Length: 196
Image (cartoon, rainbow, N blue to C red; front, side, top):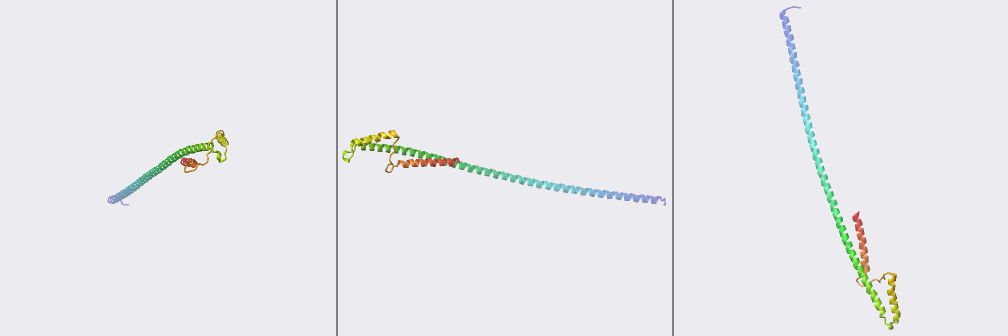
């Protein structure tokens, strides 16, 4: 090999230029790689921001839907409560009407019983006075008729209250009494239905 200093300097300069070029190329590659990595990071951050935004929108929709469902549930509960209150009022009105009907039936029955007692008392007086005034010309002995009348008066006091025959005419107390019992029965059924 030749020891020419110019050649050695040229080779050294060429090697140095190659090294510089390699270094610049490496720096350029590193800069490109860094720029690519930076771009990928930026793109990833942008995608992450989009996903966070979509998640926030989804969460907001979910909250709105839950709020709407809650409002619908409250409205349904209020409607159900209103329906129950209306039924309770109707039941209370029916109970009051049944009580009023039963009270009228009791008053009517009491009046019918009083009228029946009065009718029975009048019938008893008419029977006694008719027995005492029997004429002898009718084929009945006045003493026997008076004894029969006295016996019939004494007998009810010993045996209990006398049952009068059904009253004739428009006022029939047994009908009033039957109506009173029917009203009481109806009242009991209504109360039972309300209690259920």
